[in-house]
Image (cartoon, rainbow, N blue to C red; front, side, top):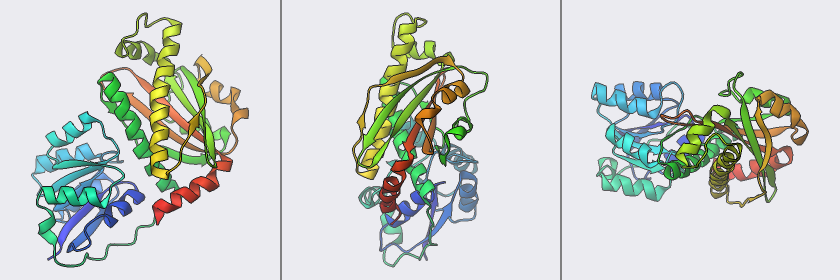
Length: 331
């Protein structure tokens, strides 16, 4: 009898990558879930004796799924597969009953190793996989999953430097006109003021700018975490912005370059505005951008009043190269 396998991830690309890394000689029946609630319902229906679970998902996230499995004592062996590679994320999923953690993007070797380690590999050996449904992946979904993995790399570096837990969202990815940029900043409150800097980047056929939008209410907490003196000083605020940008932008671009097998060069950061509104910031710099692919990440630090938005704006001329590179992930 085939072993019921559940792959629970909001990204079609991630589900496809996960399915094709499973052992070819496994006799399994694969079910897919696009959010945590669908995942729990599948487990309750007996379709997930072994579960590969993402953390950042809509409706119910992976942590909530693990809590529900514990509360209801559901028969599921859960392996978390996530781009959030923070040590504290590992610790939390283990405390909630997950067997182990694999970082994205997954590989056949990493999956095989962990299945052998926990004796799961032998549960379904000896036959071919039950043919799983064809998964259709569009380029926006692929781009969002690439951003998700890169976001986790940046959060991990920030969490290690500051000894904090960074709360991660689902990345927001869209191709849009510059007039629509403010609409993408969903987490930025209209009444809040921000300070911002930008940093250009360029690779083979790809160029753009990274914007770090730092909420003014976050400066003092961030300065204290960085152990900087005079947290209310304007020079300290500038230092906080530049140091945060170096960490988040650098790590995020590295995460993208690793997945797409390309290198980026970065320019020096430039301050765009201090203590202004998002609308004013975008309108005053609108001549810099036209039609663009925008990746938006809203970083929050747990137990601190700290929030900053990272926005990567790729030039319209970059889209053909990005489509070509992402195409390899879709094959």
